[in-house]
Length: 516
Image (cartoon, rainbow, N blue to C red):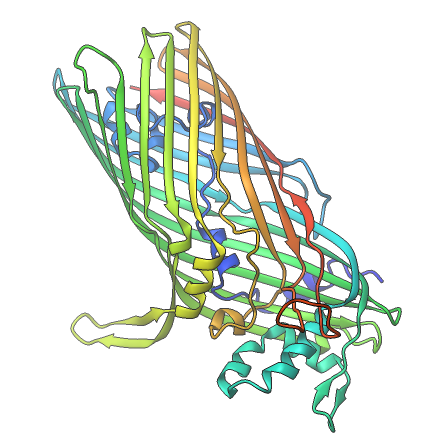
């Protein structure tokens, strides 16, 4: 059966996307990538103490204080996924405008500057195609719905209602219902296949003021505005033991805006040495987000199409990402060698998801504003599922001649996910009730390798960088369910083995800059 893109065409004629605030969906908003100028990327982003690059404005705002001349810079790239196949009309190579900004340097005296800067960059590029498939044994996604209904009846009414999401609603229309036993009759599957194409980005607009004190201490403040544009389309197909296919197609979108504040300092502990130390802190990004979408089911047993079984949803919520803390070191040898190292920590398990309870009107200012409270159930799930992430960045720049620079860098990011974590669809949370997919991936550590080169001609600089990101994970099509409390074999077991997946991506980045 060919189902590819059927639902895409349908969605183009109707309202778009769905998802709700849920741990695995929220992680899309918090994972910053290595992106910016080609010089910054080529050195692995390890410039937080070295400064004098506009991209440090987002990682250590004090880095802008090391500029001695005003500058303009623009960067664009090709982003290439090295694994996977074209899906839903999206290929593995996509073009991207990654950075655009300027620094305006104001000299007070021979040892003091006050600098102003603005920079736009993509902190996250959502371009990805994820594919997975595997056998199933006495298990299926529709069996999960049947079990949730059977056991949900025994729980308090409110809890049972919240367990029932868009996927369950669609399956309940497709599964035979035994009115006497008050149960749905499920069908096990032989195997499944899953494909998802994601696109979009988080655009960050940063405004900075910075300066230095006697060329020993550099201070910086950045206010950042974030815009979220995320969209994906997925198809989950199960081949039932009865011989037919059943397909869930989901088209979703997340949009919204957020803001944060970053503070940084760089200081040289020894007046006669270029060695310097950097410290930085970033507040949470306070997001106001909206998710919306449509989910459709195709049942080959009846021939019913997506248009006959669809579920629509739209939901607004707030998300506060965790604080970030950074420590960096930088050193130069003459004018031919620069060395940098940075460490950053963010406690992602402390993400705070808020449910909007309603709106109130401010009669003085004439504005309406939302009233929200923390989603306790989902936040507890986040605490159990995610971990704090340590990011290590190392980089160097070598100039064999003054006009030419050669660069290399390396990043290591510890895993954000507990490998035993799952996408719990039974929580007393809107994140469970509004969920339109059951799949989740526990990603492991991330490794980045970078190379770069730059050439200066008078006031112009031209820089190239190449970046390879390597990440592996474990994919699950739905939460495992065990009928027995001790996980011993039981007829109601509904378990799919995890599947190894990877997301390897390379980026070829070009920057053009002008100093005056």
